[in-house]
Length: 92
Image 1 (cartoon, one colour):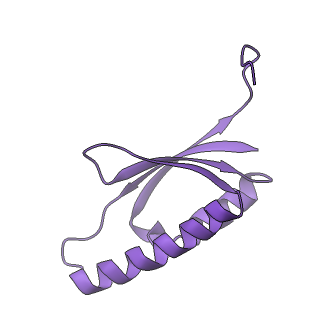
Image 2: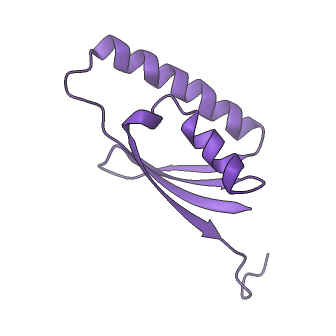
């Protein structure tokens, strides 16, 4: 199943820069492993915001929830999920 996910990150202002960098490094490693195995198919930055739009290709809702909740930045995110279906006019 395909899902479009918007993730908005809100790090607390009192978080130390060192802790923020450590979390971001773990986030990058985890997200790249999901990209390499094909479950995180697209990752797009939202210009001017600490946000992204991503497309995941997973078995279903439970797998997506497990992947998202394992993100190191998960406690600091607002996440909006949109299930996607193939459009009948798509030529692919």
